[in-house]
Amino acid sequence: MTTTTDELVSYEDALATYDPVMGLEVHVELGTKTKMFCGCSTELGAAPNSQTCPTCLGMPGSLPVVNATGVESAIKIGLALHCEIAEWCRFARKNYFYPDMPKNFQTSQYDEPIAFNGYLDVQLEDGEVFRVEIERAHMEEDTGKSLHVGGATGRIHGASHSLLDYNRAGIPLIEIVTKPIEGAGERAPEVAKAYVAELRELIKALGVSEARMEQGQMRCDVNLSLRPHGREKFGTRSETKNVNSLRSVERAARFEIQRHAAVLNSGGTIIQETRHFHEDTGSTTSGRVKEEAEDYRYFPEPDLVPVAPSREWVEELRAGLPEQPLARRNRLREEWGVSAHDMQSILNAGAIDPIVATIEAGADAASARKWWMGERARRANESGKALEDLPITAAQVARVAQLVASGDLNDKLARQVIEGVLAGEGTPDEVVDKRGLKVVSDEGALTAAVDEAIAGNPGVADKIRGGKVAAVGALVGAVMKATRGQADAARVKELILEKLGVSEG
Image (cartoon, rainbow, N blue to C red; front, side):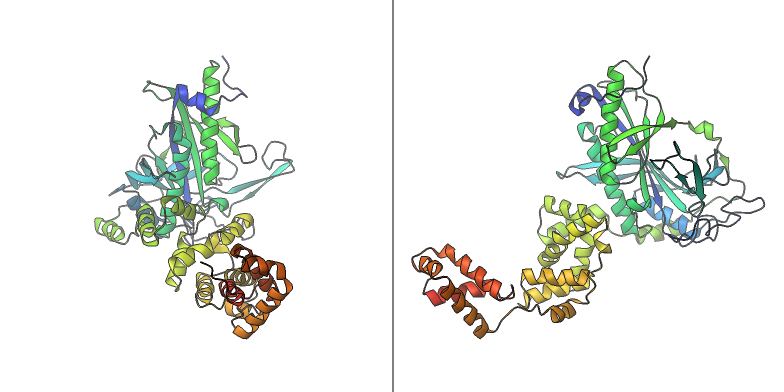
């Protein structure tokens, strides 16, 4: 019987026959200064293998020590996910061989996670709220990094040799595992994307990680199976590993739904396996047959004492939790007076925190939204950067908004000022001075420019006098050109109509 197919059925046909069931496993790299079980630095960008020691390299005789901040971060995440926090839990050794794992086992948690039985409410683009149940959140360490050299794809197949960097080995991870996600139907891929997006916002709000997916600080394994309508038993699942963008999470789930349906419709069976997602095609390819838990030969870690957080400490951490991101967005949406669609766009652009900071720096909400969305969001998207990584601060954006509100800048000039700041030309005020960008407010200069525009365009002036007031735009444009865009367009229009003895009404 065949087990694979290169064909896909349409998404609609797949959903007409099968119900998708998902399980999402998200790994979050904690932002601690040192690794989970040793004192090695976690700073990015160091020379390969320069941030290692006998402990994270698994040398004989070395002993691990638990990172207290890592435990605290795990508890915060568990509490924010409405989980129960274990009164007593311990680490386990997950045994398997892989070249980038120097100890030949991963220190993780197995049957005794630090947090379990929680949930996260996520909001879909149309406002519907879907509850995702959380099975567990447990502590573990990351592996090293393999670099396959000489091939065309960067993968081991076709490579001439491989290099290993163990700087990442031992960095603290929290793995968050959902319970089976059922009932999403055709919206399953959207639910997967929304869940990972909401989880990322939550992690960032807690301050335990920057959760930058493009840097591998947060990555998702998408488990998916199909079952015929009306059947309770789950189908065989596939696991698409290390998906590192929100869009890719959605695409991977959608592709696997279509692939599974094609295999099942052809009479084949699904292999339980890991798969790789390909950004360029939106498709997945087979990785390796997936092991079951018993294949890892878990056993309690003999070199680490159990973790038993006191109830007083847990409640202290609970009391310090920030506002839930969904509740915060709903509050801000009401305060800012924007629609649910607009707030979703702001969230997608990563602009919520920059806008809040700009308002706190003195701008009104409408101006803060205006100057962060649009051109700034486009610039960030094109450069592959987060908005907050652009070389302009919330205080500087607030200053630009103040200059517009005071009449010193119009929108066109303000955009030039922001471009100057982004180009490293200084503060908004310094850019204004260097480029000479202030609005021409001298009435004498404006009047002279208006007179010149009227004299140079007698036909247009006659049309306006004859009642075609809309033609005034041509004269306003002439004045703006003469003043290099530094005139107040509204005032210019008023002066032109006054000169021609025409009322706008």
